[in-house]
Amino acid sequence: MFKKGDTVRIARDLFPEEGSRSFVGQTGEVAGTVGNSVVVSGLDPGSSQKYGFDPDEVEPA
Image (tube, rainbow, N blue to C red; front, side):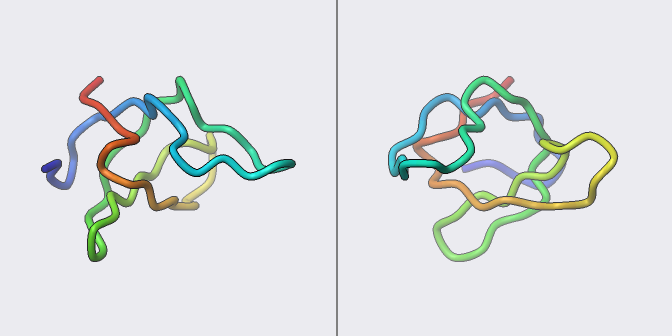
C-alpha cells in the first residue's frame, strides 16, 4: 500500500466513464488513504484538488 508523500503515476483507469477526464499517465503525491482508496493530489497544477483512486490504478513513479 502507498503512504502519504509517495509519488505515484496513474497507470490505468479501471472504471472509465464516458465524458470523464482521464488521469492516466499523470503523476501526483499521495495525500492519504480513505477506506480502500488512495487519495492523490498534485494532478491539477496550482490547485489543491485531491482525487481518489483504486490502489490497482496507481503505481510508484
